[in-house]
Length: 124
Length: 305
Image (cartoon, rainbow over all chains, first blue to last red; front, side, top):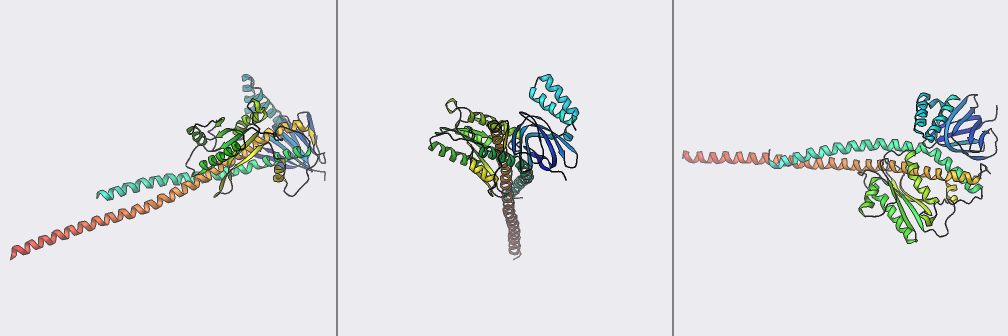
């Protein structure tokens, strides 16, 4: 059996996903970082972006994460985000509409949020 | 029907209507408590993980940060008071306000100027009536607070603590809220959010003396702490808002339950009085008839002779 790490993806108001994984890729402020079992203890600031989790069953879970933290110690990885959504939960059509509206209104924050969601949905 | 009896009947009707309303409010509050409790539970994983991370940075690095170091001579403090928008919750709001007033008094005795921030119309009304200064206030979301609300509340507080005291900033941040202990017990308490007492926070996370690993910080310990602490304050405010909401619903439920019980008792008493009044009326009528009949009998007996 391949080495595993335990992942908890929590948003401010709920637990989004939790389970075993072999690789987690997330985007920190200084670039993408991949965490595998046995990684050095790590605490980093996340950029908004898609987070990819390779589960030990061989599947892939993608989530859109809007800012937050990644912390890893003792083979336990926590992804803390104010807002986090799994790619399955993202309604692509609605997000596209949101993106258009954000572009029309020049709302940079909303545009980035919608963009991250779309990228996460596309990676599914 | 006699006048007395009519008055009793009318009062019984009005108390019955009141009882129906309080009963409905009690049941609504009971269902909301459960929902609010579930929200508190759902927000716990985030809060624990965040507290862990804060402790890790605080103890694992020698970073000096304005939010973790105490000012040598604190002169200003911010107090955030959480009350509800609506009353009918027994002593819920007055207890929270009392706790805030005690804290303010204590801080002022220690020579600090206090800025008060208030959530909830009840607290705002209390302070406005006494013409006390409120730094900022929010209302409209106390029944079901969301994380966005917590962010809104936390933003000016974080801004105030990051500013220099000379420019109107504050050195300390306190929060007064009602802790949800159980359905029957809710206690108003005050806590200091910032500057952080790292040893206290650490105790919360790992009571059995577990050693935290040496973390690698990405991009750097200062940057991580900079990003973490505002989130920490937000999450604490969010948790306090949720607990306050749950406590408020529990207090409403209890207040409405005793109102319903009292209405029931009142109806019983009034029914007994009404019964007595009706009986008195009947007795009076009978004695009038009997009296009249015997007077008539006496009269006819007299004319016979």
